[in-house]
Image (cartoon, rainbow, N blue to C red; front, side, top):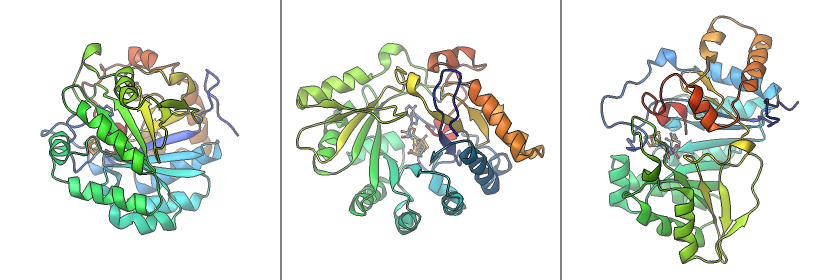
Length: 329
Ligand code: SAM
Ligand code: SF4
């Protein structure tokens, strides 16, 4: 079965934020203080997430990503990975993590055949990393990075690029891909967490491209995979490659294949909508799997054409009340 939305896009990729809690405080994502975490009882339980994944697997979902907050902060996260693996419905299980708590779980990930990890590292300079994340965990993250490379994981590094903060990190990160088989992905900053920004305050995908192309003229586009948000590039002689994600410019919407579930069980059919339905409350009202299935089919038909349409129709304005840590990126 393939589930299509109203714009004939096949929707087969679910991203679940398993927690809104985080042990870092990346300033573009979370405030330093005054964070109101959802009470634990508001978060989806391990059983609820497993049930949702089973229902989605039955209607054609084939890729799942666990994100957060920091997924490894959740005590039953490994149990959730085991139950997802046990469903035997997904072609691939992916995790986005800040890497601080990951290294000790590498044997388990390998045992479960989980190979796809995205690590968020906005700078390879320790002082700047600390300034951005407002925590002192650089060594732990680099240890996780090196261990994942040594163990042969499919590794992507996510780096949000921000004017006046870390544009000088673009080339060192690119250089890392020269000698390591990783995909370095530069992401346009999105104005979440109260940090509203004007269009011209964003370091755009084109700006990132120009910085890299100037230094590496052999930078060339490589064909994308189904639903990829990044435009990917190769550079002659590099072991790894480069991706650029226009998260602010939103030029990838016409191939979108994803559904998001926030930590408290809100369905987002677009990163830019404000959450359109509480699947948690629906489940907790005692519905059957058939009713859940019908609800997902209905919600997917409501998926907007693109992020601009989604933003137009949301009730609260973008970025005022939402943190990426509850949405999952
Ligand atoms: N804690 C994990 C991590 O940092 O990888 C997973 C959750 S984090 C919200 C997921 C991704 O969203 C990270 O790669 C992060 O850099 C990205 N992100 C967070 N806030 C963002 C923003 N305002 N603009 C663009 N990307 C953002
Ligand atoms: Fe935490 Fe990830 Fe947000 Fe940084 S980007 S504060 S690591 S959830």
